[in-house]
Image 1 (tube, rainbow, N blue to C red):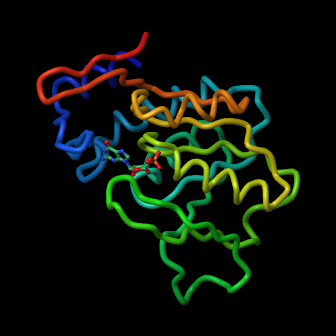
Image 2: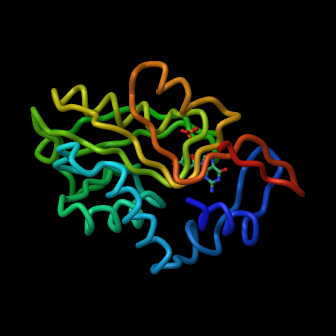
Length: 190
Ligand code: 5GP
């Protein structure tokens, strides 16, 4: 998505440790009209694939998933990163190593919301090493549901998570796929 590539170049900031900061439109302030455009593009890519639910993970996957859900007319479920009191004990739960925080957290989804036979599209803001997406795929498998594909706003291709998933036969679509980045240049895979 050319508009996203342009926005990354004009507004993104590359931080030490291979972290791209896009707080101006995605991770802190939300550019709602722009996120809606990303939702439209995700819906276009997965049109006709029979998706009946979107699964994302809090926090920054939620706005993109919301935008895609509006276009696709399917509900969104977001995995919670903390098991709060308002969630039942009957949950799918996975341990995920966080790339940005350098820790491990437990993500949970109430079993009531993932059902056998569901055809699920995973949506997230970033795909780096792939741990978050792998965790969500694990939950989907535990529910005997199907992962139809993965749609992310930004994939950092040089961290190989996306390509590893593609090698396993999983459809992964990135609206912007970064091949390399340093503090002065971001290069996209075409
Ligand atoms: P992965 O599990 O694929 O290594 O990392 C994906 C998760 O880490 C995403 O859900 C995202 O929140 C976060 N993340 C990974 N890389 C970046 C990055 O460069 N910038 C930001 N803002 N978040 C990232």
